[in-house]
Length: 117
Image 1 (cartoon, one colour):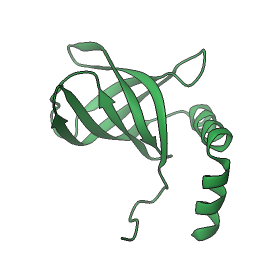
Image 2 (cartoon, helix red, strand yellow; image 1 turned 180 degrees about the horizontal axis):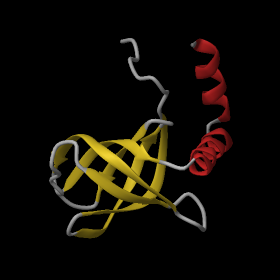
Image 3 (spheres, helix red, strand yellow; image 1 turned 135 degrees about the vertical axis):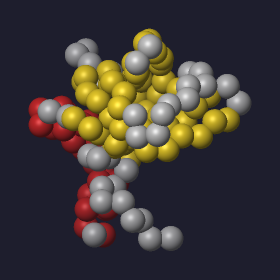
Image 4 (spheres, helix red, strand yellow; image 1 turned 30 degrees about the vertical axis):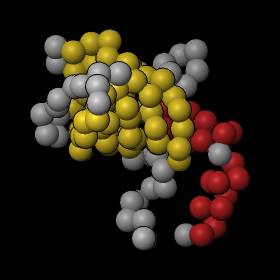
């Protein structure tokens, strides 16, 4: 099956915290990430309004990357939510941190996917 995304996603396991409206301190794990968005697994069931914006703190290093993302899709299994998010606002410096993380941890995969395009 041909990938239709603009950016390649890389499998990761990065902790993060989410806050949205009256929600705060919802924790989870980023399952995959790209320069456009991410797929996350939350520690509980959380239902979002379609296209709602949520705030994230991505814990890549000692200093969290704080950004916002738009909810694109959501699924529920057992006592967890899985959510697809597209970055709504992200600083160029934060994009650079994500690129450096991906390159550091997925250099071989990144190189192979780069040259396949």
